[in-house]
Every structure is written in structure tokens, then in C-alpha cells.
Length: 251
Length: 325
Image 1 (cartoon, each protein chain N blue to C red):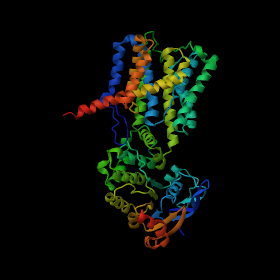
Image 2: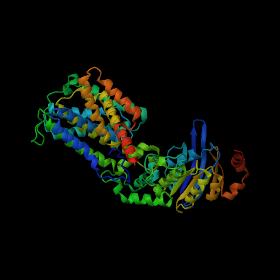
Image 3: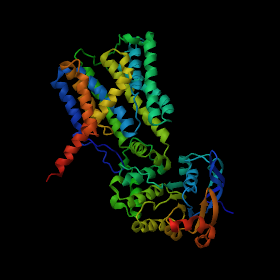
Image 4: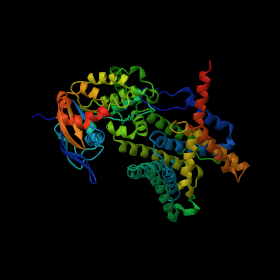
């Protein structure tokens, strides 16, 4: 079997007696469109935080493109091609949209530490950032501060920053969270246009979005993988209905 | 003039209005010859405040211990001049800069692993420890009596420090010009932009792969270096070093000056010390017992009504004027 884009082996996380991740064996194939779903408190965000290096696992391994990255810090994982977005916007709120993306592009290009030439003279960073914004339909907002941007567009900037890192694996933590349903189709449009070589793991509550986007779905319940499979199987799975979809219908 | 945020779309060219502080400084040299020693002190504090603005305003590192680097620079220049017989001002200044840098990197590497209140307390601790060392090492520093006998040779062997403070004033102005140029360049660079990124959202900077800790250590060291130079200058112009250069009060006073002028704007570091030190000079003459009351009132008004400092007020007025048809 070829190396997965991202893989976890027996990944565990305990906070004292509380187990929030229990022997998670997960595989994200190269170029996959994979969704991670589960009820509130299932441990989805904990799982993402372990993948990105924000939270050290209690045991188990994380492998990115065949390389064990369990012991690596966040920055090194990013350099190896692991990007993420945040469930709650984590933007540079008082900076222009362009700068939000340019910061990521500059880091990737190794320009960010330079201090003698003006940032605006690094046209390669600016051009690439503008191009990226244009593909997301944000070109007109490039000079607006995040603070002055409607929330839906802020969610797109979240994605733009992550794309600025040109990741091989992209973790999208509830990209449509807080976005009015009328605008969430815009997020889906953007997701549909993502470069095919990027393996995407989306964590999302919006089932409509999940079933339209994902080719494979993993259901996490109480820190354990309940079931994994293609959307049609997951939709039919009785256990999933019990723990998750049923809950959705009533909640 | 007042908003210098840097960034990838910011025009880094020096605007015409940015020549204003330099024109004022040169005009003051010719028009107010009796105030040149106060003038030199103001220039030094502007440089010192500029170093603080770099870390507080741009990188978001709050400190109450910046006097550690300023004071060390002052003592290193002073000890070289008074004890080691090294009277060349350039050598003294270079040594003050090196000492500031060395202390900056060694303390920064430790304290920048912490955040918020812990960081604030550690900055305070560093300057307190240095103050006590200077107090006890009387052989080197003169202790509470201060270090006198500071000898400063003519600059480049040509320009003697005169009794009216003319040389000192121009010398400080030149060093400030160099410091300002460096800081401004840095703020407009990718490095400067990444610092504002850290200030705005550290979490996200980690997530885009930025070595946040090392960036902070670097800017802290650069800031400490500039503060060390400012300390060296104060020794050279006063030809005396007192314990107060290391005091927590002096660090606090500097922060007050910066807040008064406006944080994270470069020129707030110019306006703050000018207003603060002139007000201090005038108020202390008029009301020797109550002058702090005037300074306090000024600060309360700025903090309550103008969060962007005096330059923030100016910004507001300019915006209103522009909106009028």
C-alpha cells in the first residue's frame, strides 16, 4: 500500500481519567476529500489539534507522507505541507486582507525574516497573494481590513491563508461555521475548486455540505472511530443515525 | 504621518511630512540655544522610546523593564570612560550597543518563552536585579553616589563636547537619525510585517509555520541594542551615570511617554518624549512640588479620550477635516 497523505496510528489523548481520543487509526489518502463528523464533544477538534501539533498526543503516532511527525512542532509540520484553518476565525484582524494572505505566502517562500527590503517590494509575494485572493473572489477586498469584512468573506480569508502555504494536506475545521446558509454555497464553491492534489480533511457540522463535498466520511464518537466509509454507506448506517444524524434531526 | 503599519501594500517611501521632526530639531538648534542640553536629552529619549515602540507597538511585547538595556548601555559607556580610560565616543557607543544586544538576547531567550503577566514580571525582575548589582558594585559603578569622571574625547578626534551642548545635540540627532532609519526600514520589511502578525494573532502565526519565538527574540535583541545605544548617549552627554538609569520608574516613565505619543506609529516615540520632557521641565519650574500632577492629568486624559495617544488625536482631526467637502 502506498503511503497515505496523512495517517494516525493508535492515537490517544487523555486528560487525567478523561479519554478524548482512543486508539484512533485514521488514513487520509493523497488528494482525498474526506470528512470527519461526530456529535459535539466527540473529540474532533482535539484530533485536529494533535494532527497540527498544537496538542501533544498521550500515545500513538502521526505520519505525514510517510514521515513520522509526532515529535515535530507546529511550524515544522507546516513546512512539510500540513495546513489548517480554524473553526473560529484566527485572522490578523487589523491587517489588510492582502497582508493576511501575504504573511503565509512570505513564510512559505522564506521571505518573512528579511528586514532590509520593504515588504511591498517583494512583488512575488504580493502577486501570488493577489492571485490567490482572485481565485477566491476576494480581489476587490484586498485592501480592506478584516474588521471591515462581512463574516462570510472572513471565512474565505481563513481558507486563503491556508492555501497560501500550498499544503499537501489541508485540515478545514468547520469552514462554514457561523456562515448564514445563503452564503455557505460560496464556501462549497471554493472547496470544489480546490487543487486536486491537496488532500482535504474537513470537520463540519453542516451535513448538507459534508455529503456534497466528501468522498469518504469518518464518524468519531467519544474519541473513537465509530465507522468509516463512503457517504452513501454512512447515510444508511443505523449507528450513525442513532448517535449523530438522529440527534441532528431533533436538535 | 502618524500611521506606519508596514505591510505588503504599504508604500515605504519617506513622506514629505516625515521631515517635520528633523526640521523642528534643526530649527530648535538655532532658535533655542539655551535649551540644547534638554534638547539632547529629548533626542536620546526619542531613540529610547523608538526602541520600546518596536517591541511594544509592533511586536506586542509588554515590558516594564526596558531600563535594563538602557541602564546597562549607560554603565558600560561610563565604566569604559571613567575606569578603563577608553574615551573614544564611538568605541563607548559600540560597547554600549554590544552590551545591550548581549543582555537582550540572553534575557529575551528566557523571558519570551512566557507571556502576559509572567513576562511583565520577568522584565521587571531583570531591571531590578541589574539595579541591585549596580548598587552593590560600588568599585565599578560608584553605587548610590553614581559614576563620575566620565571622559569623552572629541568625536572622530574633531568635535569636542562643548559646555553649551551644541556638539552633544547634533551628535545625538545624528545617532537618532540612524536609529530611526533602521527602525523604519525594519517596520516596512517582511520581518516587520511578521511582527505585527505575531501581535495580532500569535496562534495563527504558529499555524502558518512562523518561528514566532525566534522572531520575538530577534526583535527584542534589536530593541535592546538600540536602548543600549540610547543609554550610552545619556552617559556621554551627562558625563555621569546615576542608579536611576536602571530604575523601574525610568522604564515606566518611558512607557508613559510612548503611550502619550501613540503606540505602534514610529512618530509616537517622537511626540511622547518631546511633550513629556518639556512639560516636566516647565511644570517642575512652575510647580516644583506638584508637577507630577500635571503629567498625571495629561496621561489620564490621553488614556480616557485618545487611545491612540496624541498622534491618535491628530489622526482623528485629519480624518474629520478630509471628510468635509
